[in-house]
Image 1 (tube, rainbow, N blue to C red):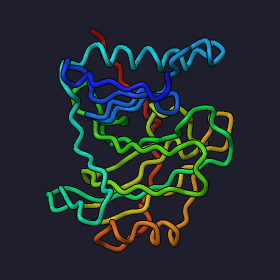
Image 2 (cartoon, rainbow, N blue to C red):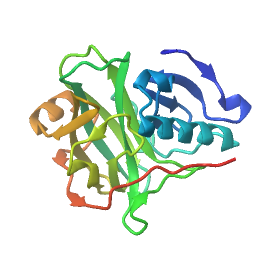
Image 3 (cartoon, one colour):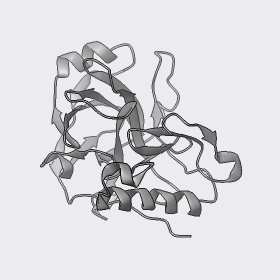
Length: 231
C-alpha cells in the first residue's frame, strides 16, 4: 500500500495521507508514527504493532486537523512566519548507509518540554518537523524549517530508533536564529546514527537561511515517549 493517498482532512481526520517508511504521515499536522501497514510483514514485532495501533487510535480520535506551528522552507522566497515572535529556524540532514525496504525514509523532530520531560504534542496540537527522502537517495539531503523557539528531540514516533545517547538529546532553537541540528543516517537494523558536517549543511542551505548557520546547543533529557489518543 505504499504511496496510496487519500484526503481525510475533509472528513475530520488528519490531511493528505500516504505511506512513508513504515509510517503514517498526516500532512495537515504532519504527524509521523512508526508502524507497518502489515504487521505480519515485520515478523510480528510487538513494538511495531504497538506503534501501529497508537496511530490508528490517533486517527480515529482526532475530530479536526492537528495544528502544527512548524513550516518547511523550500524556496528562498518562502519566508512565511520567519518574522513571527518566538520563532527560530532549524536545519537537519537525512541519508542512508544501508538499504531501507520501503520507498521512502524519513525522520521527525518533535518539540520537547523540559518541565514535562516529554514532547509537547497531543491529539490537537503537535509541533513536529518531519521530512523524508527516496530510499535510493545518494548522499545527505538537507531540510530547513521555521519552528517555535525551544527544545526539539528525535521523535519517538520515528520508525527507526536513534542510537544512544542521541535518543535522549534535546536541541535548543533560539529566537530569530538558524541552528544546525545535525545529520541523521540510517545504518541498518532500524537504527539511525547522528553526526554533524556544518560546512556541508551551510553550503546546501545558504539560499534558504537568513541568518548564519550555527550548531545547535544540546542537553541530555529524559527519553520522550509517544502520546496516544483514545476514542
